[in-house]
Amino acid sequence: MSSPCLLITRRIFPEVVARLRRHFDVRWHDSDAALSAAELRHQLQGCDAVFVATTERIDASLLQACPQLKAVCSMAVGVNNIDIEACTAHGVMVSNAPDVLTETTADFGFALMMAAARRVPESERFLRAGQWTQWSMDLFAGADIHGRTLGILGMGRIGQAVARRGVHGFGMSLLYHNRSRLAPEQEAALKAQYVSKTELLQRADHVVIVVPYTPQTHHLVGAAELALMKPTATLTNIARGGVVDDAALAKALAEGQIAAAGIDVFEGEPKVHPDLLAAPNAVLTPHIASASLPTRLAMCNLAADNLIAAFSGGQPPTALNP
Ligand code: DGY
Image (cartoon, rainbow, N blue to C red):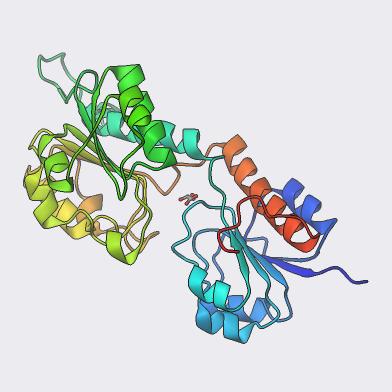
């Protein structure tokens, strides 16, 4: 019997491809250049499964054009590029890659927050440009992290991991806002206070966004929300572009409505709003919060686990639909 056909849409670790080749007839788009919608549709013809990352759009029209497709397995945790309802309606299994990236992503969120608060890239640029001529009392003086108030928007696995770092590592007080409250024992362990989004933005010294991107979270933080924040506060986004209104953020940074921002994800990435690029108080990184090598390998292997299970009669470990 011939093996099912699997399309891998981008360059991934060769050892994961080798593993998948033992179970699938693999078509590999071994490139960092994202497939266009038309190329994806073309490459998927006759394929039973697809391995995707964050950029490939899987929607109803694609599913209609690829009736053989049975599984869409993403190596990312965020699945805003996949219409799960449409997949379910077409009998297509969808999986993502949660858990394996939680701690790595939280590490990076914390690093971004600290870099923004303590002005690390800004001061490094100054030094490399040869502008450092003398020690000075308030040279690049920034905000403290320890003992300050951390506000987390989105208290899922990654939000909780950021919270643990802040509370247990840096003695921060914790405010959070989420669709649902944590269990009382989880709140107690983190000494977490559940507040409205408005109160969180008004009181927090450092706000970290870790929500999934959905129609409900589009521009969750825009001009009105930024206006609520303290002028000394920082905003860190490790969720998805589109959760923050980038134009409004650039304006708030330029006008000193907030002190600094750490941003890993952008509306329309890899394009970045020119006013953000021009903001010295924005620390900008190219969607790398989960990018440690062991974690990216684990994410790819988890997508492979799902694919292999789906076609060998097993239970895909992180399926998102029945
Ligand atoms: C995720 O897993 O959703 C990350 O954003 C991918 O880098």
